[in-house]
Image 1 (cartoon, helix red, strand yellow):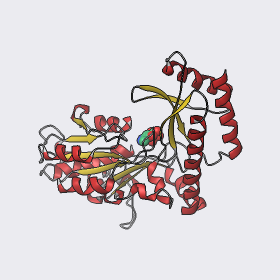
Image 2 (cartoon, protein in one colour):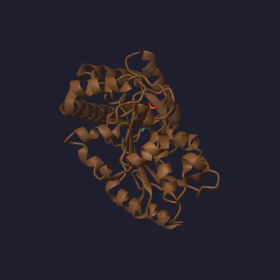
Image 3 (cartoon, helix red, strand yellow):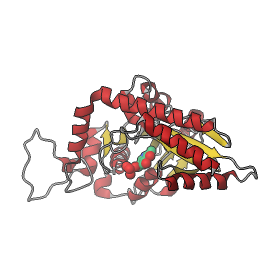
Image 4 (cartoon, protein in one colour):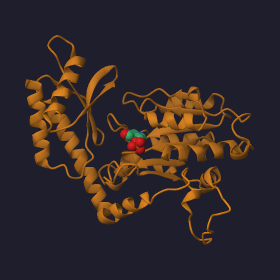
Amino acid sequence: MAHVTGLAAARHQLLSDKDWDVTRQGLAGAAPMRIFASSLRHESINRAVSLLGLGLDNIEYVPGDDSGCMSVPDLNRMLRHESGRPTIICLQAGDLNTGQFDAFDQICPLAHKHGAWVHIDGAFGLWAAASDKYRHLLRGAEQADSWATDAHKWLNVPFDSGIVFVARPEAHLASLTTRAGYFVAAPESARDQIDWNPEWSRRSRGFVVYAALRELGRTGVAEIVDRCCAITRQLVDTIDAMDDAEKMAEPVINQGLVRFLSADGNHDQRTDEVIERIRNGGTAWFGGTDWNGKRVMRISVCNYRTTDEDVTRTLDAVRAALAG
Ligand SMILES: Cc1ncc(COP(=O)(O)O)c(C=O)c1O
């Protein structure tokens, strides 16, 4: 819903730039929109695009550079083609495989030169801004038009605490605001949540987020970020040093990828078997995924309670699964 909200504001703004009020007139007859995204994007972007009637076929994939991040020269070339077309550019702050960040400082000015809207999926990565060590990864992100993030990842609050920030309040409000006769009028100065998100009724999700932020403060969030990143690095490097194991990419933040090798060359099967043995052991849980055509094991560390002892036990569990 954070993506839906950010992209609804984008849709409203970009079509209103073409003298079209999408809230009243709908999409039929409107200028056709396009969405630029890279292979790093999360599938939840596609879902928001389809829910908003923008059409999955209107997503144009921008090639990636060596690290998978959106290639700026390719984006430039694509923006120049049909340059008057309303365009949303979806960028990634911390992708779920290697934690990669797009080049916001180069892409935002380029996008705005062409009148495009920039939306950043920072489900993990926006929290890195709290850390002195990782803040540089977000350079330029402040120029984006909307950000989505999850408090239920690095902030460790219960599920369902998605957050959206929209830099254009008029477009945000115009795309969602609603009134009904039975409403109790809020004082002029009060911000009524119904105007800013897709739900009519909504429990006070913001309360736990506020409580967690008050409890942790900036330094507390930075400690969680730094610690989870250090643990991820330790897990990836230690597994890489084990016989028959291989690191697939350097972790950028708290996401890493490894795989397990088989003497008969069937590394995909061995990787799935080792993942299953680790899970069945009951000490740690890792997911498997496809990455650059290979089966790999995802290492994703978010929990503030993970101790050094947990890391040691996890590494022992990986060793045992590999030996088994
Ligand atoms: C990068 C990224 N974006 C978006 C999401 C959507 O997550 P949720 O539905 O939990 O908000 C996820 C979930 O893992 C993610 O990793």
